[in-house]
Image (cartoon, rainbow, N blue to C red; front, side, top):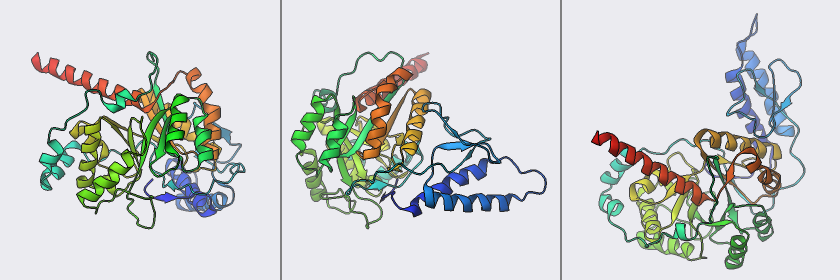
Length: 397
C-alpha cells in the first residue's frame, strides 16, 4: 500500500487476478505426463487476466484440474489456501460504486514486513547526528493523553483481541455517520482537514468509539495529493512543526495519530524524530499504517519511548468487493488467534461498512474481543514489561 489508487477499473482487477494466479502457479502440484509447466502457467495467467478484467477476483477456490469452486466460510480461511488449492475467478463485485473523494493505497502483505531494525535505526541516528534529539529527555504529562482518552474495556480473559481502525473518517459526512453507527468499540481516525470535526468526534465518542487523528504524510510519488498541511520530508523544522501542531489541535479527545499515505515521510528520520518528540511530550500513541516497508515509525517510537503499534491487515484494497473484504477479515481472525491480537485498517467506504455491519455483531461469538486501539497498545506494553522482568530475573540467576 504505497500510493493511493482507485480500484474501480478493470485493469487493476486484472492485475489482482494475475497476482493471485502467480501464487497459484507457485503452489501448483507438479504436472504429470507430458505437461509442460511453462505452457500451463502461461495459460492459467492469461485466463486469469481476461477473467479478472471482466469479472474481478473473488474468494472462492477449488482443486486443480477444474471442478466446482468452494466458498470458504468466514473465520475458517487459513493464512494461505492449502497446497492443493488454486485460486479461481469468482462472481464479480456486487453493484455499488465507490463514493467520490476516496483514495485507496496500493496493496501490501497482510502481515507487514518489519521496518528497519533497532540497530539500523541507531546507525541512522548516529550518522545524521540526531542522537541528542532522539534521546533527549522529554517532559511527559503525568497521565498520558492516550490513557486518559482511551475507551474503557471490560475484563477480556484470554480471548484474542481485534482492533478495527477506520481511516479517512470525516471526508464524507454521510459515511462518517454510517461508521459511527456501527457497533463498537471501533477506532475512528478522523482526517485532519475534515469539516465539522468537533461535532462528529463528539458523536463518535458518545457512541462508544475511540478517536484517532489521521495525519497526511508525504507519499513517494508526487502525483498523489495527500491533502493540505501534509508532513513532508523536505520541510524545514519550523514549517513541519507548524503543520504538525495545526493537525494536532483540530479536535480533542483522541488517543494518538496514524499516517495517511506517508510512504516517503515515514522513512525520513529527521521528520519522524520531530513527530515522535511531539507525540511523547503530549502522551499520544502512534499507529504505523505500514504504507512502506521503509517506515521508521515503529522502530523510532520504540527508541524514543512513544506508545505504539502497527497494523496487520488492510481490509479494503478492493473496496467494491464484499468477498475480498470478508477474506481480509478472515485473515485478521487467523492472525489474532496466532498472536493474541491483531489490528485491521479499513475506510468508510459503503461496501466496507456493509460487510462490517454484518461481521461485527458475530465477532465476539467466535471467541474474539473487539477492542479499541489503546487496548492493543496496553497489551504490547505489558508484554514488553513482562519480557524485561524475565530477562532481569534470568540475569540475576
